[in-house]
Amino acid sequence: MKLAFIGLGVMGYPMAGFLQKAGHQVTVYNRTTAKAQAWVTQYNGQMAASPKLAAADADIVFSCVGNDDDLRQVITGDDGALYGMKQGAILCDHTTASADVARELAQLCQQQEIGFLDAPVSGGQAGAENGVLTIMIGGEQAIFDKVKPVIDAYARCAELIGAVGAGQLAKMVNQICIAGIVQGLAEGIHFAKSANLDVAKVIDVISKGAAQSWQMENRYQAMIENQYEFGFAVDWMRKDLSIALNEARSNASSLPVTALVDQFYGEVQGIGGSRWDTSSLHARLEKLRSK
Image (cartoon, rainbow, N blue to C red):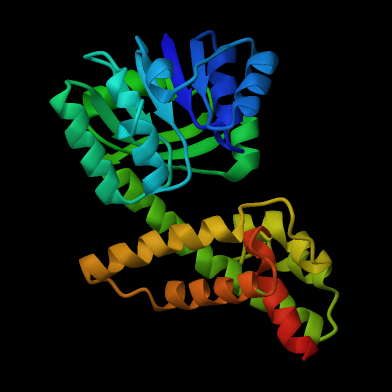
């Protein structure tokens, strides 16, 4: 298929690469031209000077940018992708954004007889680089059925959750769950250190029981060693939690733990950890102990 991919960050860059390696004709756009040029050199695809030009004649346009405003800019702003897309094409957005912007874009797409899916991803940079992302999707079944075989190039699980917006709402659930789990793991490791236990041995034992989690398996070592330079950044997590907390206010759900952990991440930012990964909640606890 002829595809476009807009946004070559740590997630989008390898995702677009998997599409090209799967045999599709991929044209990329990135705000930083050098990044697009590097992608073309590595994957032998094509690049365009604007989202509109990238989207021209594409069967599916994928986007993966930072937030609602970034998404509006590349899709409906000056030279936005929507102005280059043909009737019958599909816009599949992988940005973690609000359900409101998903519905907004879906309505604009419908006016131009273009399909739309909101399809935020989970799995982090490693999941993108290894082609094993989990994708939560909102949209119509017929549109999902057309896109699913394509995104299988970089997904180990891609499921239609419900109507437009449902993908973003499911991603909010994902981030809500992660926030509490990471805080619990940070507290457990902090407690084990304070009790002079062999933390690695403790984790080895409890990870075989009910306390086991992906975060425990993949982040406990970073917490022990106070190394926070390789995962999903605190700045981005706070952006995601803000989206979830805003949605909670509109649907009258109560998220006390999520709100508290968001405050803790604010404290991590305050000690210089804006670009540390989310396991740096442990750094906050260690700093408190050292006072």
